[in-house]
Length: 376
Length: 215
Image (cartoon, rainbow over all chains, first blue to last red; front, side, top):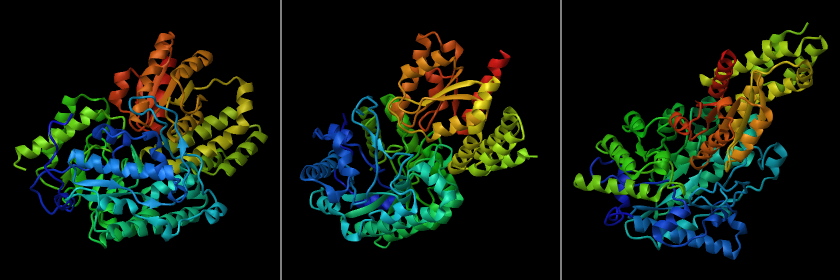
């Protein structure tokens, strides 16, 4: 249980100032990429069929039946209730983009809340593996893209709260559309195909991000694009600089054109690309940190003079640690990252369904205590 | 006369067609299969691993080289079986129950095979009992476990406990790896080793195989 609400009322303008490093004083905000439906359901007490969430999140909105549409509305309501209950400054929403994708069904891990079939991309199969499939792929037109979730939240979220729009990035979608293994081979066998798929995805991303950033209810863009694993980037930095970084800049520019912060979430060891992210793409903040790669304090020490740093409480600790350990680690991070400003507390990845809720509450509660102790 | 450097370079450069062609040409010239493996393929895959470690090669280069190595290995398999040549070790490898990710596991399997190990790949979503059963059936001396999620890596402990319950634990080296896995977790669950990436895992397997041989 949370001892007390995190804060009295939402204050997105303060969160924005922290993201843009415009102020060092004031409370340390909370910010997550996303919370799994199971977590939102437990926090709010509102039931939601989590096993069906992927139909809404990953499905093609053009083919939603009335039942799926109802699930989508319920998920938006759940997200708003979750943010209000925790006292967050924002609510996370995703745009509706009719991008055909394949998803693999995962066997039931059978662990804790993770009882539903977990699904994600098939690494060996894609929808676009050759030029013919590229030409036949049904790229959505711009009139098939909408930000209805932003408009929905605009009239329902508490005063002071804004939408953080979560956008699945072009490199992740590249892996989804091509399959990671076919993509890897194509970088050597058919690099033009890879480039063309990336360009198709970038046009959609530019448009969608620009559309969302233009809306007054949108406070920031949270751009999620995993580019690495534990010891390095999936593809060479040379490839990324030639094919991906310039495109990320176009997407970030579409956000910045409307004066909104552009937050990059990228899992893995992407240290080799950080200068590109900061100087070329122009990110305002970085999210996703694992102690195994480099503790968040070290990222802060290296980059906080140039970008904001988000989260970093390790997922393994949240999943398997004790509440005391989580509180101690939260304090440790705050001591290193809070005084200089430009830091938001949060998990190393997301409020995933396999973390202990008591640990998640402990992280939030310890941050609240820190803020109160420092006169915020 | 076939220059084995050509086979080495074809694998290093990820050229599957050339690797297969050079191998067939070498066999036609009665070059022993074991010589092709030991003098061209193993050094090539070692160099691939080294380049991956120093971040000169990335996952695509590993996959391309693994593909080339497999293309070269294909015509050699029946000859190796017939010759009675002993592998460096027998490895049972798989992604644990509840997890479907296998790119990393496949790379480890390919590098191990290129390094002279017999590899029994159980695939993905492998129950602990399946690992135990396969070790019993094959007398494998190394088990490699892969997981990509914090929730699924917990299954690794069940595999180790299963091996212990079956009286096999003393005879098997258990190596673990994957995104959420750490050296600390490996020690907690009683694994023998942790590989930070594919090439580190192979180096560890080799080291374990050498220790077993000396012991």
